[in-house]
Length: 314
Image 1: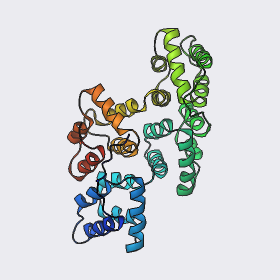
Image 2: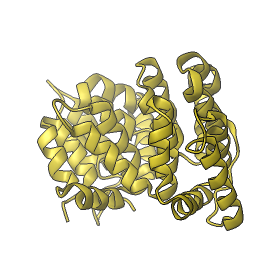
Image 3: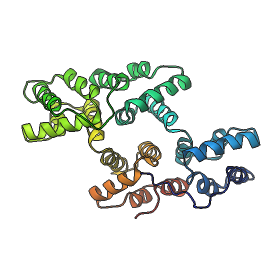
């Protein structure tokens, strides 16, 4: 569920465009007006605004926003203006170039096979290279194997799964990990990249009842680093994506300084999907509202924009 608040009586896209153009004119940009419009329009409306802006002023709105905004505000607004698949392609490319491999892993391992297939096509068209080629160049070891398989294998996306098969997979994972000396990483990769989300949640449930603790605990014990992070991302998103993203946001804001690229990426990409649930999970787990947390970690127009996307506290 989305947290996006759209005014009950909406101005026409043409009026929005005229207001945006006025906000850009003169000395310095009226960023409050820009935020007031763009942070309260859904994906379709934002697309129409871009189209109208080009028709009326013969200029690309994204290029104009790039000139007028700066820093984190610029990054967040520009990402917000893209459609979801283009956004994922841009985010993954940027994270690869910045060596933010957790960011890359988070995006790939939290998306459905259909979403991955769509953003891979855009990735190729936009950057002139296949996602798999870039993963090959920028990642390594079992982490690389996991991402390459997860990004290319088709998986069932429905809610049904076979309990017997899930129990069998749980046994295989136990044999590949906790039962033996050393870990058979390939078995973990095969099962985690070849099974649908409902099935993986079923494996976790079977694992718990057969061996007395969660599969997550086994992964933490048997694997480490980016490989473990990838497996845990897949598993957590299979069970409760909102809880997973609440945890990612918490991590981005915990301690000294804020990991702004994670904060922007998670908020902007989840607002129109499941931000209502992420806010609820955040409050439940950390006894503080996500809105208050973001308010205390950000400032200025950047804060104003993110809070506009998150909506009110209740």
